[in-house]
Length: 337
Image 1 (cartoon, rainbow, N blue to C red):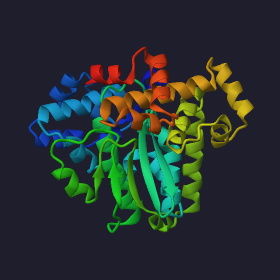
Image 2: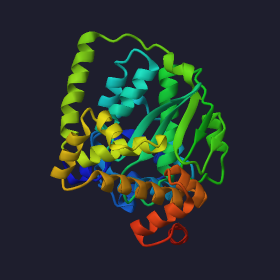
Image 3: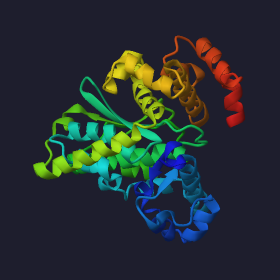
């Protein structure tokens, strides 16, 4: 594992179309990469990885040099499910759309160790959600827009061109001009939400996928198992990703997280002790990172942020936030703005 991988990174294949999109704005790729302060050979190989803070700086530089606030939308709408590599191959071995989405979410870390995907169902609706788990990402707005653009593209690939979302939510402020987003999403858009997600009618999950050759399926799943064993070497990071998925559901209990990792809570605790950390510390760290992101990148009220993090009151949240940072939520938001 490289340090870049451990700190939270993604394969560059997710935004492989950056060079052609910026070229349409008359931007030289070499100048773009140099201005953003990222490696010059980044787009030489789809398997190259980029740390999320660097990735964010690259996307913001694309915005600044092009003068186009929605350039991430233009980049992400050219991406395809196959750009996720092995997780996409595993997803396409599924029998239904639901199985494919859950497989894609479960294996997403093979492509991206800085963010997570989640499939959540409630009543007649489902949502495919995205969240960042990497710390120290200063502005998540381009990620939220890019991820929802990509997620909708994946759903249209799997469900067919007739797929239509019910609503799309963003854990960030909206751009000044929403017209390009309305043309692409063709659905109500809600910004300043606690999560970024595409919400849709649940019946789409039952849609069957084309059959796959059993030998191909066996080969893909063997590759997935081998890659996941490497990722589990950083066990605390694996636990943090599960915690980030569980936070919106309000169930971050040790028993629940251990079960999702396929182990007993005592085994979970023992693994964390070997890495010199405790479960409670990880829970607090994840809540702190989500609080920072929502206070910085949305206009949600402090009470709404407290509710999103499952605090019983805004006062209890403010006490915890001061313990984490030394500041009140309001003081942090003023400085971040």
